[in-house]
Length: 211
Image 1 (cartoon, rainbow, N blue to C red):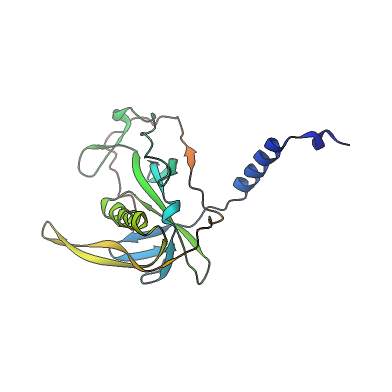
Image 2: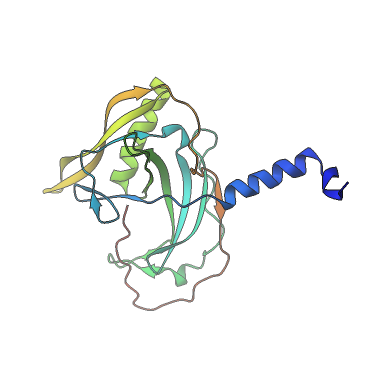
């Protein structure tokens, strides 16, 4: 007989959740820029994926030195967007953007998991730019109507803005699937909010942050 045999069910369930979280491998990012979809260095234009729209997360990502330094996400299906984290509020410490104004290091974002049914590969598409968020917004509207995970092809469309042609990302819906099981490895809720404040920097020009 061991004292461990007396652990209650709640403690064991909690330990199992910790075990699952500890074994989660971060998903690779799906990126989009100027009409090109990429995973790492591989171009994946016109590839087919299932969009886990029901597992889409909404929240905030903290960028420092052009890298992710913190995240706060909740389920878009279950919750409203959380308030901006109350850190990094000293605007004198914010980096100066190429437009000449200081840019909030906390960016509102959406996080959408996708799965390739042929290879079983899973990726995350994180959207902070307006055209990327609009592409995810159309998927969310579609899910609200169809209530099914869509099969999508990664494409783009050319839109004329301010006298220039721009390539907007498109998730072209071709079909739907009835599978509603959660995907292993997808973490929807996330709370990783650092409290350290950066020091103010002068003439620090912000570089573009990818989608």
